[in-house]
Length: 228
Image (cartoon, rainbow, N blue to C red; front, top):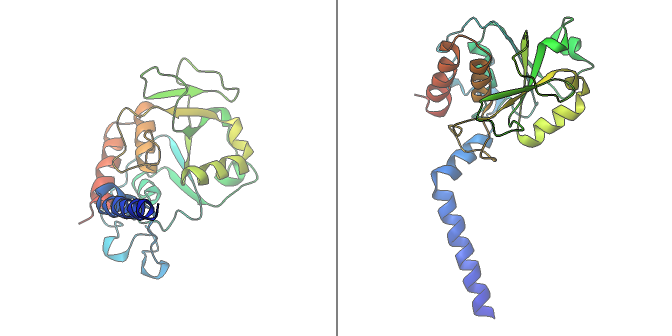
């Protein structure tokens, strides 16, 4: 019995060792790695040697993109919310856990029926990149007149926290994404996307200039995943 237990322990150690050597494990480790505030750029929150402030070119997007960022996300090494904000002229980032209502977080009165909140996974297997549901969870057959998009930035657990602490989100249309391609970095769920990938896919499906989502993805690869 003792020999069996020892063998099991050795096998577990070997499995753990090989996992740690795998590219996926290394990328996942990078994804949760935090940046020290004193070593970070105060604008893009990247390590100073990897600051992208002078490299990210802003684009004029018609839809307002409002990013609600969980406080624990800002200084993560692979976080892409700040790059999304830097590249989209018509965008806002709010860091926190809860806001009284939509106008409080946005700073002005708007019609929630003209806004959508981004979900990741749609409810159907339609093959469409995007499905939209109204506030009563009824599927919309056509894209409504949209003024803006709300994106929740955080891990799955953090996103759920932000969702339940901000019930005013229930008044918005729900934009459900069905990614046809895997994320450019490993995710906890196979359909998972980074924030900037989700924004790019949503803008593409909602009819923004195709050059904008393409630029978002290219800069994500060049400035965050494979910075020079």
